[in-house]
Image (tube, rainbow, N blue to C red; front, side):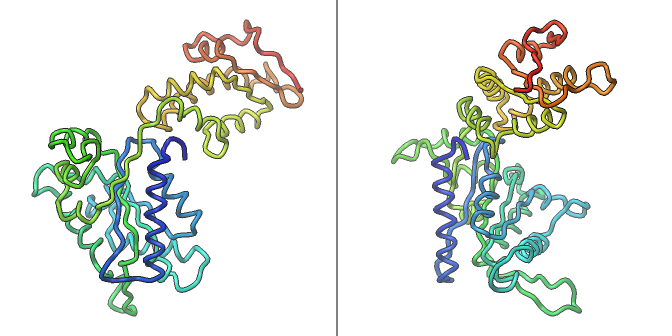
Length: 327
């Protein structure tokens, strides 16, 4: 993860506490659940997936808006969410039954801010109440029909993490009196005023902030092969016989432009695709007029060429930058 050190430390400690409680469960004192707040594209979902995979914890990521669309083909019931967690646990190796492993898993409610309500009569308020019962319950019946053996999943050890952008929630923080060191911190009361029932916000007492990614963080992402979108594009060009060599100044320009889109790491693809698809149109032809060179051909992408590609003025026939090389 890039640019989220404080958030990752808090999230790691929360998951460790979750593990510790499941080793010696105390029904009287259950571990806290959490709410992650941060702009889109800052790694909220990615962080949970990476942590769950690394620790071999069953985890399901649920689009919270599917909990609202009752009756539609895309809708999900809370029982179905638990069934998905059991299914995930079944696909993983480990001791105990899939139900036992699922009972120690993570349910990640993505796009949680979309469940805010403006009026108490709205459907989202009803979904919030169902979620409240879900989170604070001791177990939920997973029996598919009256003809099946009764099957109840113990939910006390499941870690519930909700997450969303919560755009403009800072205005509620700014409206309350600043004092006691809480002025720059989002609190459950701010989430309540944003459009969530108090009882539900009380069940998500741990609030973890993910920061917006600046140009420096986005450049770090470009330079880390395990998360860089450039890997995909380099492999694509390599498939067609070209080694794409992007100069450092270009990486900085890409990161700066992507940061202005305000969509975090997703802005990197928004910046890269228009430029690199245009470059591919110049280099990669299927009509035989410009056959692929024999062996890999290195293409140095300079800042000047990048700018020409971006504004649509690049002409490979006139460019002195392209020199096929098999070095």
